[in-house]
Length: 487
Image 1 (cartoon, rainbow, N blue to C red):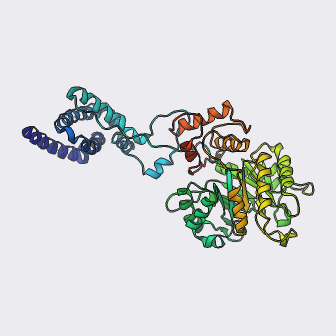
Image 2 (image 1 turned 180 degrees about the vertical axis):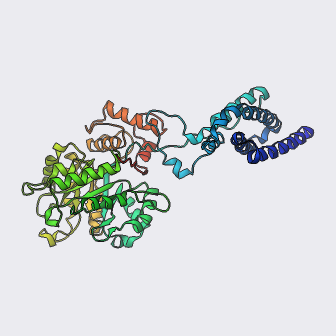
Image 3 (image 1 turned 180 degrees about the horizontal axis):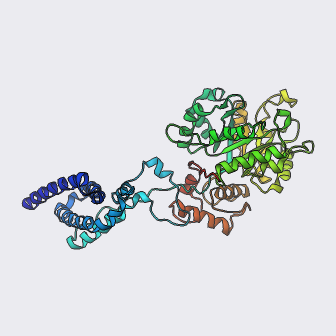
């Protein structure tokens, strides 16, 4: 035993020294293979920690593995010669099983029709093949099972906001601008997403400082964050560039917003809104971000008096509609039911914005609407087909309003098979926005089961067609939405 161990140790030391020298100074087309061998040696040393119960078998297996890898290096030299022109590092990473940092790996896009392991794990089959051949000759004890491939977040398209949200206008008046406090309150009250203002018509893009703080904290808690802006449409190109500044903004630690909302108001708000400017803005923004980036049009409450607002042109290039339904003296249930009916012909998901501010200065009853009205609004909105709800605004809502948002059973998305039509519609909307089409029927039909199964395959989850805890957590995990500008 002692002789065999000493001989193996001496051989391994000399062999490792030679490999390191060849990796640094050997023929260029072979260096990639020697670097791969160094990566394999590192993997093997970690694996041997699990074989202390049978050291003799580990020694035999190490000898056989070394021989197998040497043969692989020599046999690969011809094929690797073609890799030296710009592809060496990619091949090294794959052969050595190198992977990206855990956060980036978790956010990596995955194919929607396969459950193959990610490229970063390509070294595992190589090691497993060599180990299997050596094991047949040496007959060692069982190796520890290989780690499961990391979960992926399918990123075919960006996610639309479903569930409950809140609008942030002035961060310094929102929990004092404290990102941790904002996230804690959002989670405690059942929110799934936030809207953060990122532009000012005088100052341009203004969101960087707050996004640097809120995005990492919100994403870590599973909250999506959507930028919102107020285009005036006097200079459509400038408005589009201001939106793109928010859409493409990257925090120092690599986070981006999860989508963009354009708050397109009326002429009474000094907005140059007409069919031409609406079309130019929407189509220009869509061309800039591509077909898969989530865009939401926030529009005024449609009503018979608003005859000159070009709803069709405004919403044409957007994926969903967020009408501002501030009911003032009206019945909240009747108001939202009427709005849903007026927007139904556009065939797009509707995510209404409710009133959680004092309407007194605008001619409404003084004070934030009472709890009963807020609950009535959410109930009627879900029954009418809305897939989410949000509130204007965080800084205006009082405690009873927050309590109503938290306590309302509507727009909750629990795991397991959804039984309420509103919950099903929300899941169908989320799946479709991610690229796994399921019509908003409100019924857990075969098409919805198939969409869930396709998503689970792409996310490398157990394929059941049921939104279990793990599937729900993955569906609500934020990821950078794809930006694919059109020529």
